[in-house]
Amino acid sequence: MRNIQTVAANTFREAVRDRVLYNLVFFALLMMGAAILVGQISIGIEQDMIVSLGLTAISAVGILIAVFLGVALVSKEMDKRTLYALLAKPVRRWEFLLGKFLGLVMTLTVNTAAMAAGLYLALWTVKHPLLKSDAYILVAVYLILLKLALIVALALLFSCFTTPFLAILFSAGIYVAGLFAADLRTVHGVDLDPGTLRLMRGISYLLPNFQNFNVMGAVVHGRGVPGVFIWQATLYALLYIAIVLTGAAVVFSRRNLK
Amino acid sequence: MPQGAIEIENLSKEYPFGFLHLKRKKSLEDLTMRVEDGEVFGFLGPNGAGKSTTIKLLMRLIFPSAGTARILGKSIEDVSMHNSIGYLPEQPYFYDYLTAQEVLDYFARFHGLTAGDRAARVQAMLKKVGLDTAKKIQLRKYSKGMLQRVGLAQAILHDPQVVVLDEPMSGLDPLGRREVRDIILELKREGRTVLFSTHVLSDAEMLCDRVGVIVGGRLRGTGAPAELVDVKAQGMEILFELSGAAGNLPLLAQATRTGERYRVQLPETELYAALDALKAAGARIMSVAQIKPTLEEYFMHLVEADRAQASAVEVSGK
Image (cartoon, rainbow over all chains, first blue to last red; front, side, top):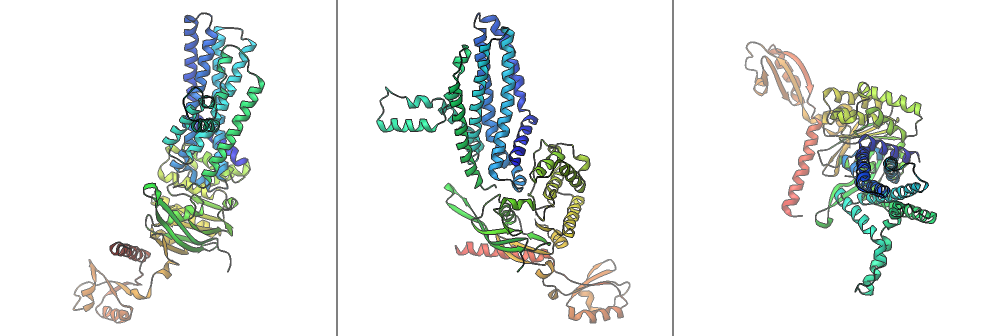
């Protein structure tokens, strides 16, 4: 556990010192601009606009960080050979991987929390006081964070056996495909033979279903999210992450470092 | 037979290459060797000979195609073994967003040292490798030589019993090389085992109890530097001064002259006759020394033999 904590803390420190959190400045400017603009052009739907824009930005910035930094977690260490001295210490390779994963999730948590605070601030400028229903935004932010953790795990897995470029492509590809996982499951009215339909259904269950983490529609309109949905999404993310990280650890534990 | 500090048995490493990785290249072939407890062992070989491959195999950075190895009696697959070994990678590179102090503290944490012990060890190591005044500068501003010192510090930070250094003198200026040599000698005095790879033979001659020479992925010889080269066969060298008329001293025909100073090499059996003749001619004898073939000559002989063998195989198509 000590080894995992040490690697995770250093990964977080790396992100902070490499100015990853500077993206928050961009986000803050976006939110301020949106609050001013929306107040002028949209009458009555300012809140919906702000929440929608804010959650989309939190998700988009998070996905970029999760994919690019997720792939770099291991590939950069191998490329720059910083891993050599570390693996000569009493550290298991899976401990290193898990530490890197948790370090980036920690970074994303801080980043997402700061952006959520920015979103609330922007919301407050167009409408105060804030209502109890505005707390649902936190649920959406939490589910975005689960989604980002899953993307990091996938990026980490791909970077364990392929080049950074391909790992980025694979991670982005799986994310896009995962947005349509539910649609693949329910395809009908298309002229396909039963074998292909079965294959598509099989693939849909293998793909991470990223719609499980999307509650933006409900939250933007101030509707609540059922507790059971949150629990199911949490369990789904944790299970999927555990499987993906186990796969990454198996691959990485036999990888020759050149 | 007592247990060696490092025991390697039939270690081999093959890499796939070519289209679809169907071909295989051997970078280490059936290596068997022992490094005794408390000795400084030099691992010699030209670039690409298999030195770093062997060391990476020992550190489990790469995995063997065949064979086994043990360090301090433990299989190299045992992660706990890494508590007792220190490793300096070739051309080391560390997290450049950290300072030297931070990077050493980071590595010390993996050895379970308490905060107080960590701070004391880190400080001592920084002083030992001469980075005390630069400890708060981020490594991205460090020169290659300074990074090498950080690498050395992290390798010996936790008081390891066995220290493995891959090209420790690489990138260092003469002063830095000397400091590394002093550290290796200090480690030896403290009773630690040191295995280091190098292609600088003078370093090996100066520091090593024994050396192993690896060429083309195969170990060609191990032993004390003096054992590896045949001292007896090489003859003697006389350095003398002779001013004025040298007469018809036949010895001068085979001597090399620099001003009034002459240097002549001859078989050991002719030494005393030559000294008598020089004395009679009024020469001033400066020194008489055995001609020792250098480790470099031995090394070059092995490298050339390997190249000759490789080209013979190529010509015969085998």
